[in-house]
Image 1: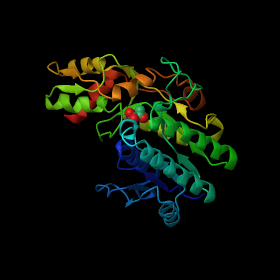
Image 2: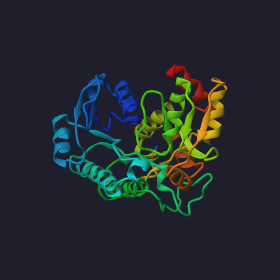
Image 3: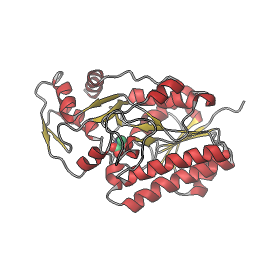
Length: 310
Ligand code: AKB
């Protein structure tokens, strides 16, 4: 059997940084090629500069390294996307379609494509939002992810491409910083707390959003990708949940360890984005199909984040 060789696109990003290392520990350091738009810092394996909008360059890398799987993590997120919607659409869609075309032609063994809770919007149930729900997203990021999910499903049904996807909630980790999202506050808050600074939160105190701690997010991704094909019944994207909390709740979780910590609320344009998203997610399809189960609660995450950041 051919040895798997994995290309991670967006390996310098919040999830890419951690997922690349996790993949290397499973598949071997030399078997995971980290790529990004900018040079990556010294890491434990091979890395290169790659723009996924350049289909020829992508094709050349896939041929040269005999890539068998692609993890496509590069995207313009919800808040940044609203500043230049057409650019966000172009980047998010062109990169995905380049990868799906290469996956069909080579063919690749597997493709991973993250989606997001941003696919939900108008008319979707706010609490315990189901797997099969109306998708009328209110951000260009959400529109691109909802469309991307449908392309993934199309390439699977029409060409047999084994593309798998998760609808990530906000991801929180100590290893890397997020960039341009609406859930970023839940990472920034820990950095302010550690520095002993008051955190100016860009959302209201009581804005509940679905969130997931990085180790759970990485494990979910690996478990989804390792599951046998017959277990993958959702070929758009799986709902995925860990916990739900508000800015006030994460602040009081931090205050249990750092009692002097303080937060102020200065909602900006990201409040409207957060208000359009679910407060909690029904991930029973992921649980039933391939055994997903989160481990971290809010307080367990806070303890671990503070321990590592300190
Ligand atoms: C964002 O806030 O845009 C992302 C996401 C939920 O997909 N973190």
